[in-house]
Structures are given as C-alpha cells and as structure tokens.
Length: 435
Image (cartoon, rainbow, N blue to C red; front, side, top):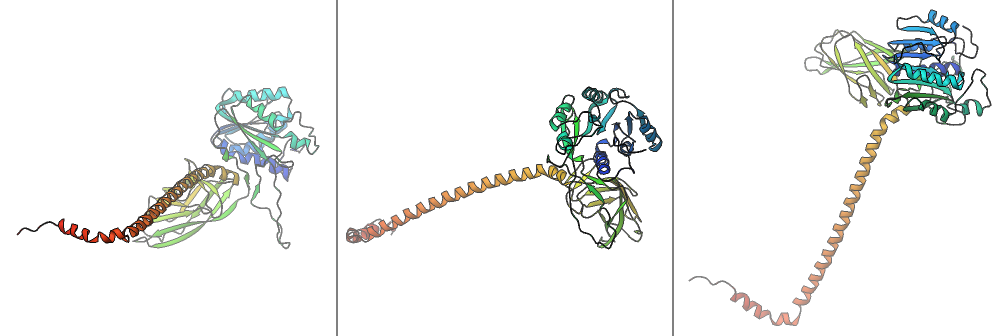
C-alpha cells in the first residue's frame, strides 16, 4: 500500500510518525491481554495484528476496502478478522467486546458522526468495558504552530475531548503523548546505532510537547492506569545476561553460578540454564532475571516443576511481580533436586518513572504520616522534658532555701542555749532497761 498522508503505512513511513503510531499500540497491550477487542479504523492492520498476539480475539474495521483487503491478506491468524465498515454503524452485536481501541480516528469525521460513533462504542462494549481513544489536541497540534491537516474535519481541545467522552463514560483518565529531546555523544569511528527503546513520556501541557491526547474510558473505576507504558520495546530480539545461583551438596555449602541468555522480543522473554547435571542434592536456587532495570515480571512456564517466589518485589499481584530494585530476585523452589537444565518463559515490562512514582506514592504518604506522628511524639517528649527540668529546678531552689534556714537555726543563740535541754530530753525519752 502507498502512503497518502491519511493512514500510517509500515515500511513506508519512518521517524516521528512511525514511533507515534506504533508506540500507542505497544503502550496498551496489557489492557487487551486475554480480551475481546475491536480496533476501529484499523488502517492497513499493523496495530490489529499486534493486539492479536495478546487478545483472545480482535476485529479490525476500516471504511477503506483497499486497507481491509491488504490487512486480510497480510495479517492472517485464527483470532483475527477484518471487516469493511463505517465507524457510525459498528458490525458487532451489543455487549460483544471488552475493549474498543480507536487511535487518531474521531477527528476525521464531523460532530454528528462523532456522536454516533461514541454511541456505537458504548453499545458494543460489555458492561464495565474500556474505550482507549486518541486524538490530537487542537491547541498544540494546530493552533500554536499554525498547521492545518486537510484530512481532519473536527479536532478537539483538551476540555472538549474530555467533556465529549464524559457524556457516555463515568471514569476518564487522560494522558499525553509527545517527544523528549536529548543529546548524545558517540564515537565517530563506528556506525551510529539506535538504542533498544524509543522512549516517550506522558508530558504535561507545554507549548511544544504532548500534542496527542490518549484517553482511558470506562464505567468502572480504572485502578491500573500504570499499565500505560511510556517505553516502546524494540521489535528486534534483545539479549541480556541472566544469572542462576545454586547451592548444593550434602550440607548445601557448595555454590555455583550459571549464566544464561535472557532473550526479549516485544514483551516476551525466555532464558535457558543448562549443564547443571553435575550438581548433587540441590538445596536452594536463586534467580536474577536481568540486572539494572525497574521491571514487572510474569512467569508463564518453566521446563521443571517449580515455584518462583519474589525476594525483593515492591508488590505482587496474581500475574506480575513488580521490582523497584535494579536487581530483581526470585527464590526457585524445585520439586526435584537433581535437574540438569532449567528454561523459564514469561512476560516482562519495563516500568516508566511516572508509574513507579505513582505506585510508590501510597508508601511515601504512609511514611510521611508516620514521620509526622514521630515528630509530634518527639515534641511531646521534649515538652515533658522541659516540664521535668522546670520541676527539678524548683525542687533544687526549695532544697537550697531549707538548707539556708537550717544553717540559720543551728547557728542561732537560742539553739546554742537550749542544747543541754535537748540532750536531757533525749536521755529522758530513752526506754528503760528491765532489771
């Protein structure tokens, strides 16, 4: 297919446009996992194809017959179908999909069509289902730079887009997509190569960044917005060293470290440790998946029956263990103590800084509250100490006054004159001895 400016075409368009379009789909993969999904205005189908690798079923629709013909021939799979359809009349039954995805679509139709599209989205979504929709922010995309996209019929300002979505959904979470500029130095003697990730941040409303709005919409409260990831994994296979520490022997004092190649493609990982057949009586196993990254890990399977217990995870759900340490570690509880190899497979996600801060915020709040309580307790103890010192000083003054009075009494003339009388009084008061 040829690029006309209306639809992104892989392998025909590169640079910012490529990253913008691909990153949106990569960012939402955790939301479509094991779901029935509609990709509305799917274009030539590259995004629908990516979703199909995570969803149970995905339907891609587009008004362009050429696009659907291309998609049907290029992206064939058992859980994917492509249909020619207008977004104003979605070709699906009521309450038949869990997630509707629509990127850079709504601005291509007029107000009436936009209202009808949103109504149709709500119709086909299951109760509590989710809409994930993006559109340019008119102020940043068009007004500030004086740009007009002739394929756009009605663009939204931020508040307009939010109000529009609120007419059908109770809970809306808004994100921005934009580029960050960075500088680097590299050797001029070697061919420059790109990094392993395109990094895009959810940037605040600034004059030149975050020109695309991405909204998560549902009638149920959306508690896992951190699944939106601002790091797009490279499609090329990546390899990282992974370590397995094994204690073995009769008393478990012998230890060996095995290094395997942990390969990551997209968000799937696999690592194999072999040549372990010389180990006798394995006592304990510790696995360090990959060093130096803040990650979320979900272990899907292993070649040996085993239980993986996170040792330093920040939190753990049924699916993912989240590590904010840069050296995630698992204890591996094996059913057999004489294995020769171990292969581990699963999903890995690199967390962005904003997600980490959001997940740590409740902990930070608790620590700040605890610190405030300790400050109040310290102040109370300080006040108590001051009161005690004040009381002590008063007692010391009273003691000095009594001692002074005692000196005056014992040195007086009357005290000296009556001294013999006091001696006689003491003798008289003595108890008599029995004879």
